[in-house]
Length: 172
Image (tube, rainbow, N blue to C red):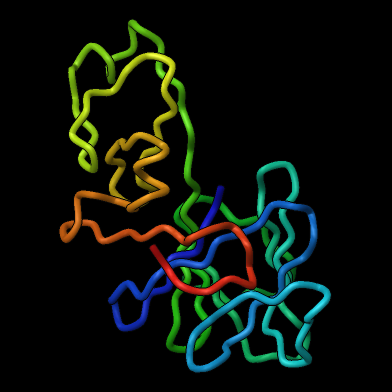
């Protein structure tokens, strides 16, 4: 799963989940915050389209819209996004954060180390899904990650969306 972390004046304001269903998402600024709209609710004032394909995200700026910067460079055409890329929309920065899911085996370092999940404080076990925070790399049980986001807060502060639907609001 991939998310955009919303940053305003170097302050994290939440995340926007990207739904990789293959349907385009349209990036808009609504109510003073960036958000996504689906094809069915495509607004006339969208800034860019995002299309997920084979685990990659394609950014397609809207012709005639205000300029969009990618890693401080004006986007003139389509661009494939990578983990850590920053899309700038005026005062807003959206940092792409790709979450990975791993299933450690008995001999993996994570299991041998006896490291605990910072959310539930249980040690990691072989065969149980683990997600690492896309911002700081701290491992969490997948279920703990979905329940609470990065538990190394306030040091990290990365928050997870409630679900991957572009039309749902709020953060966890």
